[in-house]
Length: 247
Image (cartoon, rainbow, N blue to C red):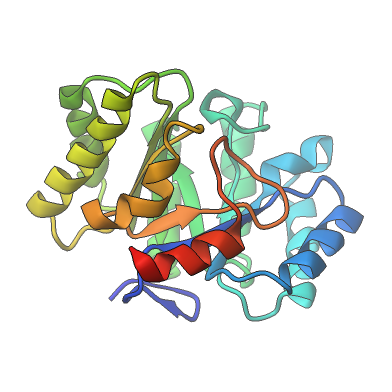
């Protein structure tokens, strides 16, 4: 069974992950304190929001601060690049250095790895995570569109071939059919690979239904707004926590 920290991925699904999008240590403390009064299952620490302060040394300092505030909450570390909707704009080699530092930090329970990262960097980072028994969330985001059904299926299969702990895809819909494409591809993928955990999301207001009903089609986790949203279409965590019992 998949686990992230103390969280075992057993029903009810979807598990609720809330982002921390702090831009300073003071902001980090404030967001952590606010999350003490929210309902969720795990947090995603979006380190890319720290901007110019980011470094392989600095990351340990802020992770220590986060752990003091939220000592027992399962933590997914994410460094999201600009090309995938995040704030990180430095070269890939710097991305790899920061990610490697996060991998070595005991505060981290799982790590996001972007599929579009050069395989020469991504593969050794994934191996390091596996050596530490850290689940890797292999992710891909398209903030422009939802490709064809065949293209989404091809994307999922290519990512699955890397054998991550979780495969994650998120697309921006332009039509209701795009949302249906994500649902259909999610269902077909989980039928082909029933033991392969999947997160499949459609973003924006049009895609909000995937954040509520994605679990019906095989998605095991969703991202909710705990303090500040990190992507378009995220719903309030407390609302999703309640709705989960009715899905």
